[in-house]
Length: 263
Image 1 (cartoon, helix red, strand yellow):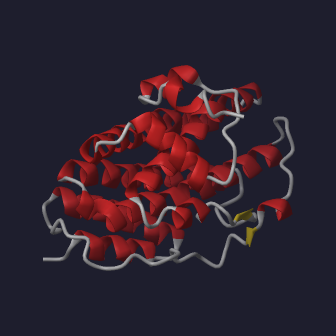
Image 2 (spheres, helix red, strand yellow):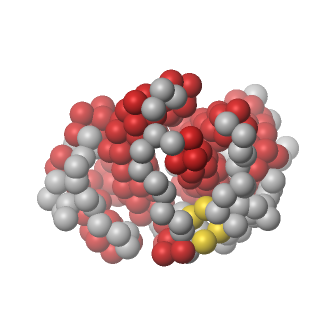
């Protein structure tokens, strides 16, 4: 029987975006059917395979996106979001393949489900780009989105603290305003896609918060204090308001976590 680790590594080493999307959903099906042994017995790659396009640029080199409701600006925003979802497939799969053996099956259930969600989000955004005359890879993309994975590859608690509880939680803060901008521009199709992604991301942040708390309890750590320490030591950016307190609360990420150390 193939193992969870082998299957996760295969997804990470798939470069083509649509092949990776299909591989992630195939991983989820195989796990649900009991076709994968719960063993993480192979090393995950330091960096996942990437397609030739989009061109990946350092943050300072990224072209500035125009504000407003022009179609060109909306395409640029959708492309940036598609890239985030594409990288998010690998972040979820790497979490499973790298750390899944340290947790019970419920952890794997949750994070393989997240990977399948991210694959679906990517598909929705790429389809919308094509409807607008573009596609994923048509524009440059941010090269730094994998940095959080590299900074936390040695510690499951650090990975949970930074990726779902900082980076995905930031998406909860900014997405409602983005939805409003698309609606104001008359692009209800894109607004509905982003609203669907937003609701799924609340569940993803909640999965991170729940498993972070459970692991802290298992180790006898105070969850809030441990999160503060890990964010200060492993996250290069700053936690900046405004925060979507209601969405964060729905995800179990209460203000005691982030309000104290926000800049």
